[in-house]
Amino acid sequence: MKLQIFDVEHGACALLTCINGTRLMIDCGHNANSGWKPGSYLRSQGVTHLDMLAITNYDEDHVSGLPDLLEQVHVNWLWRNPSVSATDIKNMKAKNGMGYGIESLVNILPTYKYTGWQPPEFSFVERRGFYAPYPTFVDTNNLSMAIHLNIAGINFLFSGDLESGGWNTLLKDQSFRNVIANTDIFIAPHHGRESGIYPQIFEEYQCFPHYIIMSDKSHMYDTQKTLDYYSSKARGGFFRGKHRRVLTTRKDGSITFNFNFLKGECLVA
Image 1 (cartoon, rainbow, N blue to C red):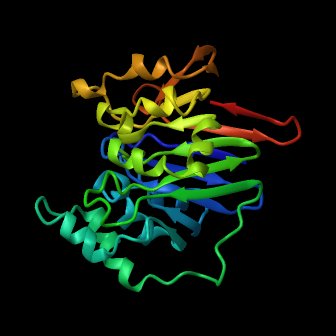
Image 2 (image 1 turned 180 degrees about the horizontal axis):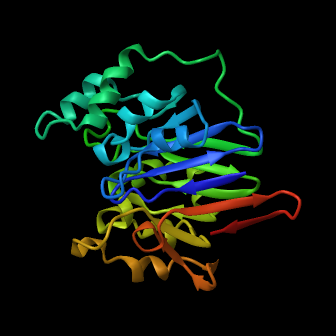
């Protein structure tokens, strides 16, 4: 059983593969530099269907690989902030236009059919999504769906591109505050950019994870220089021969969490 966080530059894509063979992909960005795409990767592994695709954010960098994904595999279930319609997305993108990934998502939403009556079961996984309903916000970042995964007792939090308004709204929910306080692995919002920092989750709501992960490309903007801040908010652990607190796809490449049920442990590589 493993959770892979892929290097998709300034984007997001992760894949959970469970011991019963079910797969959950969280976002479906691609790497334009290397040519890596999520659908082509799954095909190369002999995978022809994806049990569930989760979308945390309605921006291009979270879905840029969707056209390839839909071409290569069948997606059984789509998990997202359901309060946002295809028309809402079009309206939010009216000023700057839609990329191919968002356009692909908008095109499938009105007619998307789920496979089966019940969503798939992911063995040894508990999952929950938290989101603000549209039109509480009318920007894509604060409409992000934060995803909590408890995988064999280890808590992961994918926070999309949440900014202060979205954090403030979600933290009104006691169950979300509980998730924050018990997070072991925190995937930083907005790829670790300054706009996603919400100090209260650490200072007031006791988020103190082992690792904080940033999915981002090489340094281009001052707002990416948040490594020291996030390093002060994590406990750290063993990673590739060193003690690390913050892991980044721009430095470390793809990151994999392997779950060993016999030993009751999780190893990150």
